[in-house]
Length: 89
Image 1: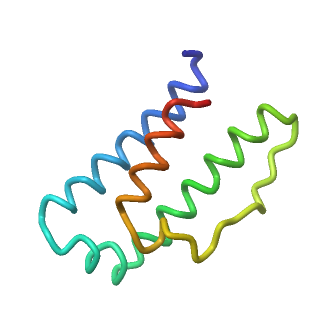
Image 2: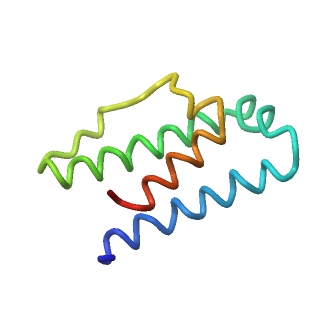
């Protein structure tokens, strides 16, 4: 794994840990959705998608957004996406 990939995946792994620790407390959906955390997580993951897609295509489009997606309301979906992003396919 090159330095950019390692630098980019470490924060994703930290984000996954935060989401999972909230899940361990129970009432994950209440904390995740009502606090707006899901919107922020989606925003972060949008940027990671843009970076990964842009590096392969030669153009990074940070305006590509997935507002209203399941990531905003379901932390399990967020963890699944994080797991895929960490693989840096």
